[in-house]
Length: 308
Image 1 (cartoon, rainbow, N blue to C red):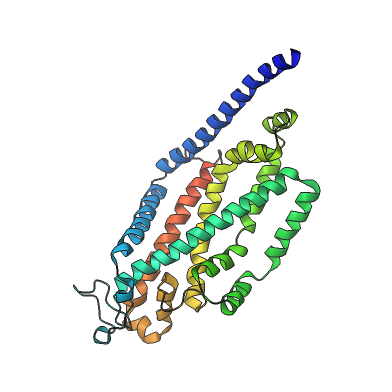
Image 2 (cartoon, rainbow, N blue to C red; image 1 turned 180 degrees about the vertical axis):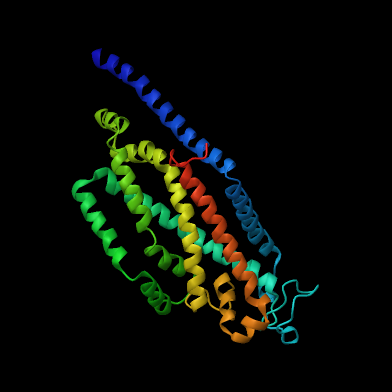
């Protein structure tokens, strides 16, 4: 009888704890949204990002890529006109169509890499920070090992050795891009696990996995969103850089970086700006917009830097 009464006394406390966690999570997201609305530059950047993403996602559905990538000997290096708004390249391909399809390929790859590395980094950081001691020591040595590796050189070597495919490229880029978010989540988890709500859950005998993913994770979710947004910008730069150097998407698969590769030809650089400048402008707008949104979200997580 006494144990039954104690269980009934504990259950309301659990319900109140869950309500508090939900309210805290909602409050964190409302702060992010409020900060975004106050930062007009970040809000415009977000609208631009959504617009670009929708454009490069929807329009390629109506483009015949095989027809687009054919070589047209009668339209080589044509300047912008009514027929070709951004002109044609050295193969007679419509630059606007190649730009849209290339942006879709680049964004799809970088978004998937960001999601994959973010998920693994969060899981790694949560486990390392929550269990601490020897587990944390071993896992952080693994992170240190990956951090001292010459990442760009190793990525280039793997890209050369392995036959190109979208999945291979995604996996190679993801292997070395998760350590930053893992360290950040680990440090935040170390602080969170010392708070009263975690200690109370441990006292009640709540399983560790449940504490990590149902109690600690919701409280660090805004930080995860901020870090993944900033990581997306760096991943866009990494992909376009590799493609520009010839170690990313092959020539027959358009991407923003492969379009920039045409600028290595002095004649194209000086006299055929329409071949490479639109890709450069789109990369600049993408990275600037992502960075503006990321900095706004980062500021929202720090009460001393918020605009209101």
